[in-house]
Image (cartoon, helix red, strand yellow):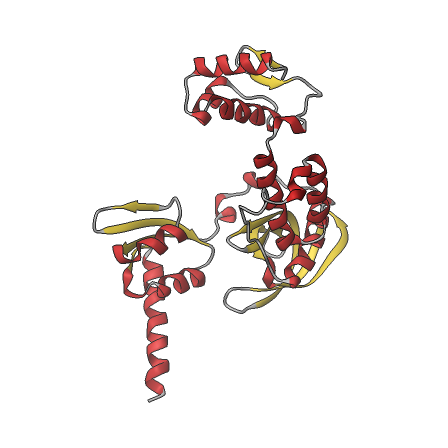
Length: 299
């Protein structure tokens, strides 16, 4: 719908310094001419959009403009309200005050019926909630972290890390940072972090994209082939990475470690075949042999 697209264009302009008509046309799957017509209508609605020509041309909102609550419906607010409520389950504390502020902007949320139709379940353990806020504090103040970390294989190590950002993915928090021990960017599952200490040492954020490719490389790139009987779970677990080929499904994905890849592949039993890499095939065979020996010895 045009109104939805116009609001979407406005939000793009709010979150970016300048955006071209070509970028907007690709984003909303319409012609460049349609984008120009939409921008004209946005201007007529009282939202000041400046247009610039040349190689650096494009659209941008005039300085000082911001959206007010009349631009959002009760349904829009209810989605945001439920998302904040879900974040309370993952972070605790500050999200509550944000929910209260949002209810102040749209009192209809307090009457019920609007904010109970969508549920974002982002609950996590109390231990993770307690550690997320110190991590965020360190990120905001560019402070080095020291902590103990247990890998997926159970190996315990001591780390000093320059924190970059926090990720919430599939029910778990992850910390992205530059590991001073390994001199490379790493991802750490927050639930495996213990004895966290925010050090007094400040750091200058690094331009990680300039690092050599081998230092940035992370995870295991795998090509897997699944039987159709595993389709529902495969499409859920590997969203956007599946290719249907009639009587099988191919998946090209990246696992954060070899051990994690093996654990996932084993969970599919005979419904999956490793196409590549060969190292992953060999590790799988070794793991199967270990399991076989374990049960053979018990006879």
